Image (cartoon, rainbow, N blue to C red; front, side):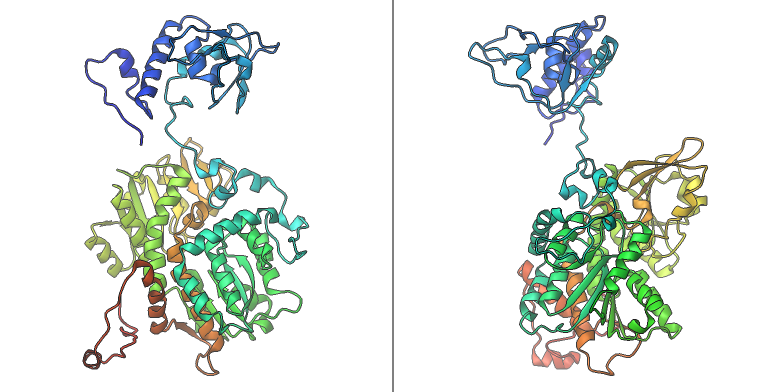
Length: 611
């Protein structure tokens, strides 16, 4: 952990210069102090001092001609020999290089230094500028901001914040890929990433005890034998555990992504390598998005009979494009607010011809995924995307449902001043009782540092509001729908879009004001970070049980309508996860069960009970 040394009143002017800098150790501070003294001495000369050259190799200049023998500064016996940069010769430096070992005579040759990152300085004025700025905050040595996940191009970082190489490659639809076993019925970014994806899936399995326990208990019975499931959800390591569990239980699956930015490319590759028909990659276009769903629905010798949806897109496509196929579906399982809303609309207009299970409003989904997961993932995503500090920030959370509650509580705990907007008086009263100020957006929009939408509605944040926001404000969405922020209103000739990093854009107004838009208004926690595997285990187990229930239900049990998950299943999902905490449930006596009018094995609460 970094040490921060306060500056006393009687310290020298050099010490004052160091007050704003961050140092890992006292030795670093001593080195920096020496550097400042050396910098002052050379301020009138176009020279690179030996000390500066050694401590800040980024300003060393590589001569175009062969390197002369290195000059060595006489040092004390306990100090390291340092090569001197020769003035007047163009040299090439490196950042973060390691000093080579000295030879038998205690001399370090300049030519032995192998730079990791090199760049050229063309004139002495540039060198002087670098000398003057070398000890300030923007020096690479003293920069306290660490590299974010999006600034590296590793497979693991690509899972969450993407990489430039992913975006610059040709479309996966134009590639011809196949697995090591010759299977080609898939479309992912790069099948060669499969090994990395498999490691991520293995890690996720360790944090998903519920779905793994369900896989172990039901694999022999194979309750989904004969089920052909079209899946349209986020594709990440946690989803992969669910997909492989459904297969272990006897199902055949074909899968696409419900969000164009949330797919972990290496996980999609690992699933394809394992023989699954996966059609998804990070950064799909809208056309790619619908093409991938269509490829999952239509295939040779394939007639889906179950749908697992997140947002209702697969249900919508099959209903509109393949109505005859839709009538053959045995059941739909939906896990999002948006998708459930669509199902209820279909039911009201008598267009829903198959039974559907509303998983989103099940207790295990609402209380654990929506609340506890969002409480952690909102902070993770904002940190990864913006590196912002939350203390003292003015934050508005639009919507105080379970997602809004999680976001508000997390930000308040970190010192943010949180305001809430609500249309529901009950939720508004809850926000007030939890210590939040409930206001209209128009009353606070000019002072907002961060705005989060979490309603599931459309046009919550319009262009009119964004025109009034201050420069540097951050805007993101935690609701499922990508229509909460009116992003289309920002795509006008008078505004300039500037890509900062993957999933982060500056939208610049004519007067120079800019707002920071994350994930183009899509789900920020799955676009810019990840979610807790343990919480996803709860949701995944709920989805699997809903599929088993609908697929095995006798004719007539479920009509063409939308149903909530039976309470007994909610309790069973919870019980699968309790052993992780070494929790032991108390059992009712016969007398107690009779007094309460309950079965000793549950369910323990009526359907109308609010947890």
